Image (tube, rainbow, N blue to C red; front, side, top):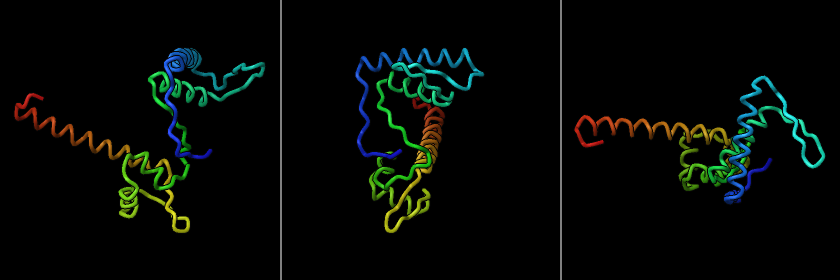
Length: 150
């Protein structure tokens, strides 16, 4: 699977409604069959056998579409360019390169080009988000101690 720089397309209202109904039905089916490891899907006269993990992933994708979100699938082992990684973190490419060179995010070099594993970007993003939440919690606690109305 390749990673593209094209932005994913937002689902229209009709697709979002269909996705909501499908996600609900898949959730029900998965809950009612917790021991089932495969699912058969009949499509255009052909039977497909899918692993449970694929059905769970499909349910999650449909749930996101139902919320009106665009979807992109990236394998966790995918290697990204610095621009792709910067886009995921919503930072500039030079800032990302600084994070890489400072050792904040692991990377490899192929010739003169840096490559960053998708999972490393997600790990960094989750750690950064957790730090932000912790700092906001501290600020909220301080505001409450000083009766600032928060």
